[in-house]
Each structure stands twice: as C-alpha cells, then as structure tokens.
Length: 400
Image (cartoon, rainbow, N blue to C red; front, side, top):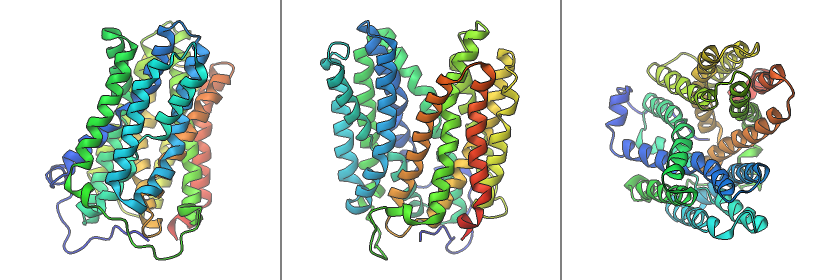
C-alpha cells in the first residue's frame, strides 16, 4: 500500500514552503494549463456545431460524449502510466487529443455527425491523465506528510478553476476569432501544459513502483475500501454535474441570464476558499473521518437552494457546498494514496477522477429530465446524500 507517513522531523507545511519546493509550482501550473481543454472542449464543441447552424441536441450530445469519454479513458491511461512511466503516455495521449481537436472542424459536424462523434470520442479517450499523474508525484516531491496534505489541498482547490477559466476562454476565442479558433486554442493549451509537466525532472524520472502481487484485471478496484470510495464519489459527481443545469434553470425562471455562469463559478470559488482553509491546518483524525465530515457539509450545503431562492441568494448558496468540496476531494485523494496497491497509484487516482466524471454526466442528464424547480434542486442534494450514506455506512472499509 502507498503511504504518506512523514520521514524525519516535521517540516513547515505552509503554502509558501510547499510552493517554494523545487518543481511544485511548475507542475501545478502545467497540470492546470494542460487540463484547461477539459473545461474548454464541451463549450468549443457546442459553439462549433451552432456556428454551422446545427441543432442544439447534436451539440449537447457531442459535448456529453466528450465528457463521458474523457472520464472513461482515465483509468486505462493511468494503468499505462503505472506500467511505462509518465513521459511516453502523456506525450502520446496529448498528441492524439490535440490532433482530434484540430481535425474536428474539418469533419463538418452537421454534415457528418458520425465522423464528428468518432473524432470527439478520440479527443475524450485520449485526455492525458495529468491530474492523476500529479497526485502520484507528490510523495516523491514532498516526503513529509504535512506538506503532502497541503499540496493536495492546493491542488484540489485550484483544479476547480479549470471549469471557470475553461468556458470563459472558449467563448472568448470563439467570439473574437470563431469556433474553429477556440478548438485550436484548446489543442494548443493542452500541448503547452503537458510540455511543462513532461519536461520537468520529477515527471521524466518518475518510475513505476514494484508490484507486490499479481495484478488482477480489475486493478485497484479489487480493494474493498476503494470500491466504496469510488462509488460514493459518483454521487458527488452527480451533484457537480447538476450545477450547470440548475443554474440555467434558475436563470430562465428569474430572467437573470448572468446566473447561468455565475452560479457554477461561485461553487468553484467556494471550493478554492474551502480547500485553502483546510490545507492551512493539520486536522485531527484519519482522512476517512475527514471524508465523512466534509460530505456532511457538502450535502447540507445544497439545502438552501431547494426553495428556489432569489438570484443573489442562489449565488451565495452555491458557495456553501463548494466550501466543502475541496476538503472532501483532498481527503479522498489521501485515502486513495493509503489504500492503493503498490505500483498502481496513478490508476487508482484516475479511477477516482473517472467516477466523478461519470457522476457528472449522470447528474447533468438527470437534472435535464427533472420537472419543476424543486426536483431540479433535489438532484444535487440526492447525489451528495447518497455519497454521504455510502461513506458513513462503510467507513470501516476506508479505515482498514
């Protein structure tokens, strides 16, 4: 099993000390830039189809296909990283994804929807596992347990900005130079971020761990505690996937178009603030206990949105569950690090990311089908509540 036990005397685990550690800031920035396509691509794809006067249904289906393929491709690519190292896998995946983004406008999505769908599928499946790879590097860069926790908090907090900056960049490029340019920028930023990561010494020299047992085809899923954690995070993903539809629905009811973009941004800002606060202190108890506590706050945070509040209140209400999101994810990554079999950490982190992504796709679909503001607002609450129930009910497996 992986471990985050501190070696030697406890070191300063403040943000300044962590960011001052060689390569930490570069890897954080590279991963953030390299993951911008995850936030840009669904909007850029939608804008491309609409620019060709295609139906909104086709645009939405292609965007959903990209998100689902991106989630499902992460465990497979993570397993390849654990077998062959980061450099070859990240470079090959980024090259494939960027090429697909560049080719998508040439397919003529409206005239050739099947060809466009196959291109989007390649772009999604080839999404490089930068986030999982970064989590696998923290024990190498930061042997001290306190610094690892701080880095994970900083990491989990800032990665949420992908879904704030990504859509803004895509719409900005499209408005200024067209939808095709937005996809070119998506490909370029993915290449830039990956280059920053793979040319760094820690990523280049990272070697897969030794396997302590014969690896089953299910990989990390054979560990009972990880199965519980991953299943619960599908519920967390449902809540996150519901936010965009919830915001759009509220914006239309209240005739406040700005709400569609501001509510998801408020959730991400809450996550940033909550994660930074969580990472500043060494909290008592095991990460499994932190998971349950953060899940309680995350689930309860959706309650103020049930009565369909006024737009300003809805924005403040979206900050509340976001405040518990980054601590929840940080505790989840620490739990994965502790439970993952030796030599399979990247795949285990990738499964975590994939399960959240699958939940997001399900949450978006369920919220789109819900009738009335109460049911729409109930979807994220239900997802978060299911996650809490699983974590509480099977907490002993997470602590084993």
